[in-house]
Length: 428
Image 1 (cartoon, rainbow, N blue to C red):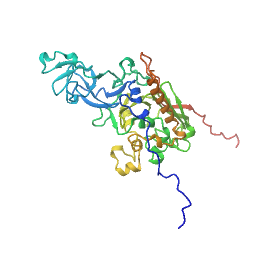
Image 2: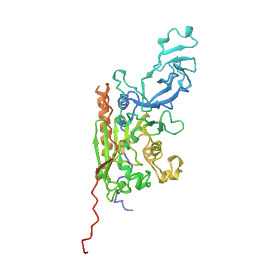
Image 3: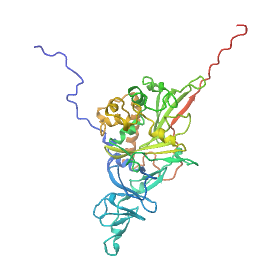
Image 4: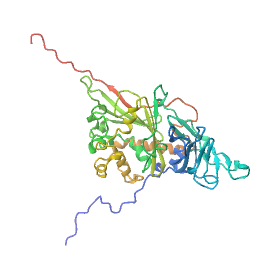
């Protein structure tokens, strides 16, 4: 018996325990990223669906909260646990001026003031001794926003040029048509950063949404992108990334579908605004040089779940359909797929969820097309460092400022002049 002369390399034996970057992914109270995210307003509910019927239980940034609208139409966000004896206000009753706990009938207004203590002498002689923890809220663009950070650093709620002014006939679409998620957002079971990084990773479009699973974006080759837009072997040369006043964006150059005998050179772009916003345009029905019309927020529930919210301004009801139903897998919506179809025709959800509840950053091998992801992580780490140093993070303003300028969608770079058909010479 001879000694083996070739030793296998690259096996899994003896590898260090994998790890994730906690400064980027953990978002509970007191964590670096959690404290940074709390310096921004976060969407917590959709305005139209938040009625004064019942309170709604939610969880964001690792905190269990109740969001409700009182009988006067005022939205409120309070801790779920009642300040009296700890019963859940999810079972409470919404009244004209607040929410009343089911257990002993104590009532609180939208700022947590105790208004009445049923059963106590005089309906409560020490109402000021009980204050239900609460957070400030504002409504805009069809959403209810909450601020969960230090009160003395509360910023103004940002405005965006693509969502205002609301012209005649325009509507804000903000509700997911998903049972149980139309009020408090669409929940997915993995860390918030995985889906947010996906938004600055356009190279995945040129493989996952085309070469691997077939063309998944509706309109491909007709109203949307031409098929050669998805060429994975040229995308690296067509991609550029840049930092902006509010975050980062990418652009992909491509030759659009033929118009009058020529293919115009255009670029598609999407922009991220810190800390967790994506500026997006219609990718099913492309309109050259049209402004974007929607924002998407990715809000951590906790370290292993997140909620998505959106606001879309349009006069066209079909625009919402193109957004919500615009990506197909094997010609179907995701909820119609069999397990075999999920495996053979994966999309974003399958890829991102398969990275794990929190992806293991120590196991990554980053490459050229990950430049956007690297840029985003650096921006987020700077944001965290700013907060730790006592500075306001990027994009936060404590005074009113003009609406933020956003850039997304398709822009025309050049339109070549068509070569005229040769005219035969006289006498030919």
